[in-house]
Length: 151
Image 1 (spheres, rainbow, N blue to C red):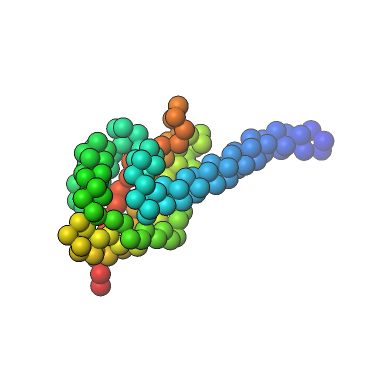
Image 2: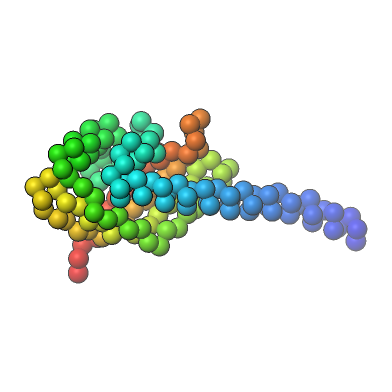
């Protein structure tokens, strides 16, 4: 019986360590998502863009966009007077991939933006962010943003 208990303990121990690691990564990604979305909401573009890898795959408004092009466009829009009014995240779910070196965060976002022309646009969307642990810390390697049509 003692040998059986030892065998079970040896078999279960790695799962307990993995579960603790998953919770730690999940918590870290939740904090990163909060900071990432807060940077976007407050128009802190340096902090916002620091979260992406240079070669991240971004999908907005029906097409892929390179990070560099998106960054240039967004900096120009904000410099011209555009401003994010709100960017409220809800229903955040985080899934840690095996190995703990990548995680996927999904959530709904209610966004409001005022253009340089003073037009206000409101949108509800669903976003998926794929985070990967890099030499520079956790970074977004893929982001998919999809607006939800009003009913």
